[in-house]
Amino acid sequence: MSTVLPLADLTVDEKLRALEELSLDLAAHEAQIPVPAWHLDVLRERARPTASAHAEFVDLAAFKQLVATDIARGRPQ
Image (cartoon, rainbow, N blue to C red; front, side, top):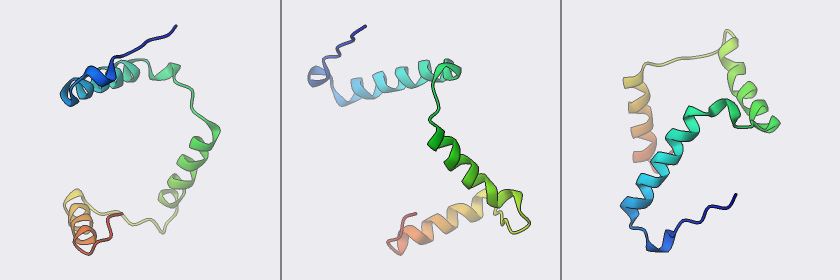
């Protein structure tokens, strides 16, 4: 099946709405979306620190402050 969207003819708002519709539809069928092995490896690696006694957690307000500080220093990460 080939779907052609007239992207050059769409406004930015129309493109964003189309993207939202695609995202919602994909989310409704997420079990059908293949997950590459490398992605699972990344998820396992990221989950590892939380399984150890060395994990540090902050509440949302503290996290927002850390991000704001990094951005102010020119280090958005």
